[in-house]
Image (cartoon, rainbow, N blue to C red; front, side, top):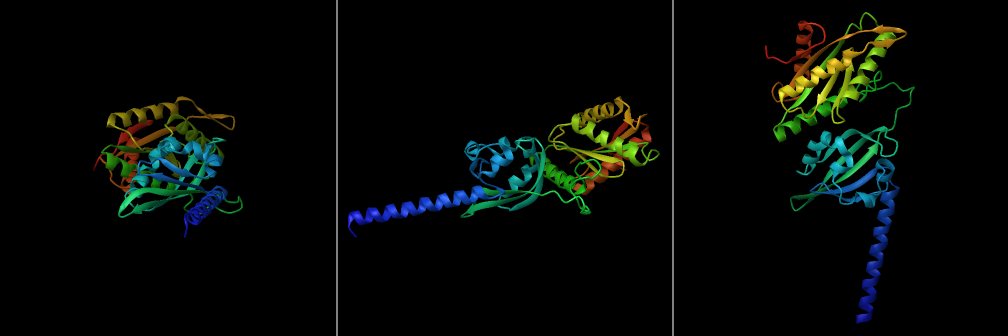
Amino acid sequence: MNYRRLVAAEKGKLKALREEVALLRRAMDQAPSMLSYWDSEQRCQLANAAYERWRGATPGALLGKTLSEVLGPAHAQIAPRIEAVLRGEAQRFEQETTDGHSGARRRSECAYLPDVEKGVTRGFFATETEIAERPKAEPAPAAATHDVLTGLPARLLLEDRIHCAIELAKRHRRRCGLMSIEVEGLRAEGGAPGDEVLREVARRLRASLRKSDTVARLGGDELHVLLPEVGQREVAAMVARRLLTILGRDPYAVSGASLVPTFAVGVALCPDDGADTAQLLSCAQTAQRAAKRQGKNEFAFYAQP
């Protein structure tokens, strides 16, 4: 083959390669899910057009940014997942993030798949697919991720976040905290008044905590607060006192009447009191019962029997 034919052949291969890359790019941008690639330093190397629809940022603007910069406070919740995928372990989970345009909360199903070459994890591929809202006529499953009454995370989502917080606390040798809060005096009210109070308690808690914290309801008149990074025991005590003040400061206006519920707050710390999800939940609830025995609007740390 002479020189001209060789050059023409190489140009043909290059053209075909460019067309293939362009086709793959168009296919990625047509996908409804967010597709991306992150290197070992968690910097974006590739993203599709869905990121602009979800996050309000063009794929080009994302290049070189870290996952922490893109996700903001939500990054702390999934940090153990990221560390695991960079060790070569595939991760599949659900998360809740904020829409970049409307500010609304969106639930999504995520998959992080490691990019391993010759035993070394170079980065990971990420897919994120929105979980569609269920029709109103369809009853929520027993393991629903959100509480119907308050809209707060329910058991499934709370347990997943506790697990992530515990793993992060172990890895970085720090504490996370879990609070169990009982709203007392609602059983006598029952029905709609009690429901309205619970919704207002949920609203006050969410407004008083960091975005990285989680307020959840597992049922009944108890709510839980997860503090992924609480520092010293004194900090947890300060947060508990502040929440009691905020919750009890103003009466609850319900159906033309003013209700004044009281509260009992139990606090458990990891790794001090529990090293797994079930244990930490149990310790927080035990501490809450101890707070009730102390009187109204009290808090107590878990104490081993």
